[in-house]
Length: 340
Image 1 (cartoon, one colour):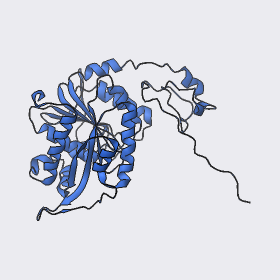
Image 2 (cartoon, helix red, strand yellow):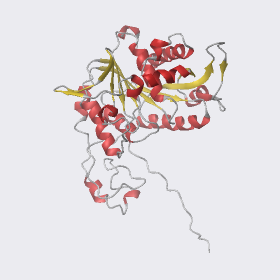
Image 3 (cartoon, one colour):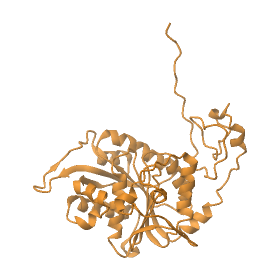
Image 4 (cartoon, one colour):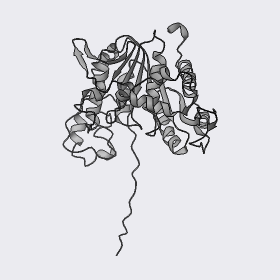
């Protein structure tokens, strides 16, 4: 006889985005599906906490500001502008865009630029920047970034792995701890720009970055998408996360926006914008549209070889489009020429 039991989806609880992140308590069981987090003010008190073996542990976990926040704020005091690079969907070229944005800022030799790779499980920035084989150097001042050029540094978990093929199989608390170290222990020095490359979605890494950087200030987030609606669906969630977390959305960039033939210069829409693409989404959600960057196979080649697409193909349509995006990012972040 067929079962008459019906499966219902629980209403997700509201996670406290302002909850300070501290050392994760030692739990005796895995966190349940809708756990508000042991550091949250709702810990041990939410509906999902009822019957959880960790309830008493979470309820007794100290709440309040993370004591490391002032240390992080002091360490980052020399960084003028901090920009998050976000995407809702994986595979839209967010890390590739981050590297090109960094090269664009660093093209002005007067700018000091850093990239912090917080994609703990899929660190690709070192490969794209040509420093995959490097390791972290530790001194009395802290961890030193790996310098791609005199004015462009990178920090990534990739530099800590014995082999580039080693998987990072970590739960949220360990990821949070490493991100805190990247901010508290890395000697970034005086930077004009720190670009924070994040993994897709709205997960532990995003909450950590937002919590740790809130005191020192973030200029805002650049959201990367492709023209298809399947990507825009997740971008809407990413923008909603930013608004709930109090992060200014500097704007949205449409990546892989057509293909310009290098011979005849004709543009084909390989990924068609069936619902209007990023430009229409930006208008609907009331955020700036920063520009559209076309496909160029040479971008992938440059990333594979760890070279600067900007330096090698300065006259390409993609490079020209990205220069326009850089200009718009600076405008939305309120960065003026006299700061340079």
